[in-house]
Image 1: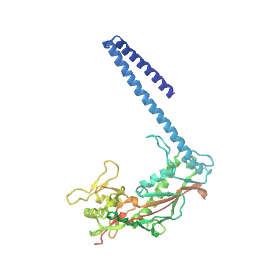
Image 2: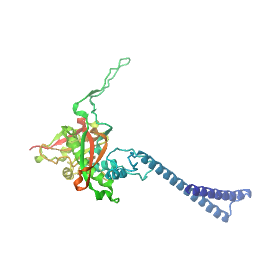
Image 3: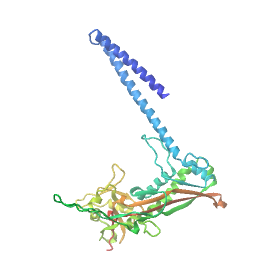
Image 4: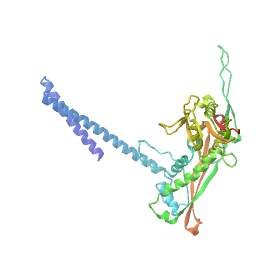
Length: 396
């Protein structure tokens, strides 16, 4: 239908153009200018030509947009994992699990083709869970995330020395200078398993109006998101990841009572990071809500607040570096690491496989509840510890 309409517009525009040319050709043959009446007719024809050209361009753009949306939709549908019922969406998979048709399913991250701005595309269960997990903590958002199919050990080498250049005279031999690397056991990424159980009543499952995908995504994202963010932030490395705080180097030790930091402490902390690392994209602060509230009251020596509210990208800034609020960070206190600063993408998170969801009718059979178990395998570490440093509260 759209193509037929475009064709008619092209045909009518061509006719208008032929009429305009005929008017011009007649005046040229008679070796005269257009009369006032002819000039008015020509201007009207010219306006009609422009209007139809704009309409044709708009219709063609709409047709191309529809074609791209259709192509993107086909791409998404082709990526949906097959189930016993050939479910077409993650919501169908979850409802099939709820009905007992599917017992286990692994949701994986997907690369969705978005060739047109604003194209409507389905959101997968995995993406909705990770989105929720990011809302409850920033570690999955600001870190470098490595996704692997399995959970075998993954060694991250650390550069301990750089190549160096020297001045060489004419005809002299250049010396070799190779960078050096060191492999540390603490920089081996495994895959710790995080998970939880959630139960749904039979009535809830059988109600077709209930957003099963949204409900389970929210519950899973909150439960696993809090646990994973906490471990990636302050994990000790013993049966849990090496958290970014635990692995960071000490930058500044405070002297104020109660472990409080000052504006000068934060300025010193920012400049305790090597200049080359400080200029990398992704450098920023991390602290909890209470610490962020304290920072908002601090002023530098000239009386200027060091906190700057966001006006564009959604991230508030401290000393012109973005600050990320993390509920897992400790509040100010004696001998407490309450603030970190540095190149946050230097922290590596390893995610093994996807998000696995299993169903059981037996666990709560007496209450007629269906039990879902969600599991995710992750690990994390900071190979280059000098890239992230912390403020240590004083003990005075």
